[in-house]
Length: 362
Ligand SMILES: [Fe+2]
Ligand SMILES: [Fe+2]
Image (cartoon, rainbow, N blue to C red):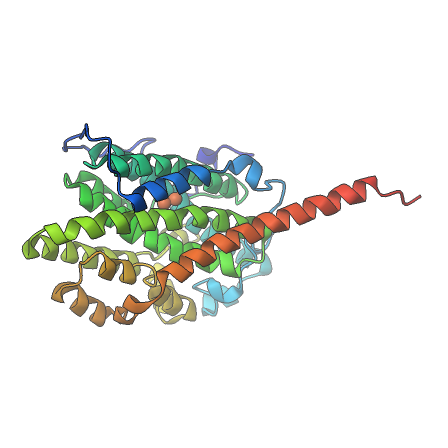
């Protein structure tokens, strides 16, 4: 396998990136009386640990023409004249770059989650939240590892896209602990779940689908954590403080919806980014993306009590207010069951392979 830094289609700016910090690191001497729900989540976090190296069968390969074996409609420029006129080989390159760009954003975003979870451990005042968040730190490291291993098989990687970096930078700089939760645990995690789900449910490639299914099993705990911690905290703030958070949320939702445009890919492949954008905006894929993106965010926002006029009017304008009533618990239960299905599939294939080895055919 080539080293990741050798397969970057565009070199990242520098090999490290620093965000200056200005917040209090909090100790807490009250070790008793953790909230039952939070301690339950912590216990679940420990019990559901897994090893990316052994749980996923990395001997599986991606497809040469269409790495994740996704329907053509999930390529946002399919149907565009310039794309349709390409040779089979050129189309394969576009698919590999676009899918590789998406997986790169997942990997880079997971590193953001790793760092935010570690920040939460140090900053949050409650000890039960520190306990839980420490399990998330190892989860996120495993997610970075899983996506990195998948990305190596694409033979192409992209740096973190500027809009995502802007948002992560902003929540890391903010000295208030709940802003890290809001940006990472509610917006980015919610968005990631919607994006992972689209691939998990449509990719015919078993390796690509299994990576998302396993990661999603952990992510639903992460969203549950943000929800638990913030539901207790926001009622204690003033209306003005809550309004400020609602404005931040709206801005973050717009940023993630409108600026996740893959412009790096189109430019790198010599396509006209404006023509691609015009085509993408009306494509079925993007219409689905824009709406399904928020299925997991809106109900949480309502649940944590950031449900004033600012957010309701904003979501109404975005056409996503109706998601407030979607059943997040049902989605999370399904995430858990689907991950188990992938484990069962792997065990079945292994048992057939075993039997085939011992079967005498001569
Ligand atoms: Fe993650
Ligand atoms: Fe996460």
